[in-house]
Image 1: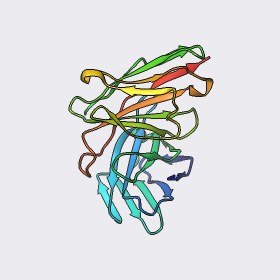
Image 2: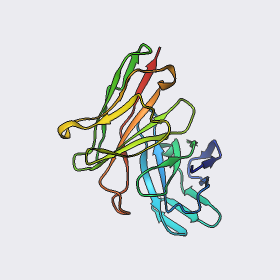
Image 3: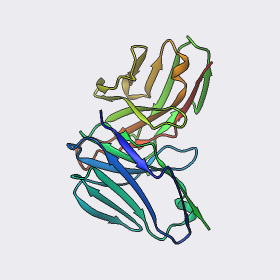
Length: 110
Length: 116
């Protein structure tokens, strides 16, 4: 079964700083990778997806994928207090099922 | 954006009783999912459902679990009978399809189930 591991467990960055979240997965045949964000009391919401090796940028968020290294990351530039949340990496091997990591709790301090 | 609703938000029941968790998925979505999250642990896939049938289920989807969506109404997860280890937050999700442009899953806020 797919194993997804995230690091760090928690991260504190100053407002305006860069937050870097890491994720490794176990199945080399995995095709699709997602980053979800969850605010307290809400369900997870998709931030962005990445399917090809390399970088994908959407506004302040950049995802990076290296399938050979079984690694995906998320970088948040110019972090804002509203970015404070739980971030999940999720791997979707077959378009249907999401395998989640255990999450990184991000706190952006004003 | 598209919203998935879940009813109730909290449910407390005695072990051995039956419970039904309700999900109102995004209106034009065709695929439906249940995930389970025990406090402090990662969210885990339970089951997905399409065209009236279970497509795939995990080992967490025990025989006591069942899902249905009668006549396009709520997508439900029923647990009968409940056990202590069923205490968790259950998230419902839906997606438009399964192709690369349709696979995004939209999640509800979860139902916190406590089995005493």
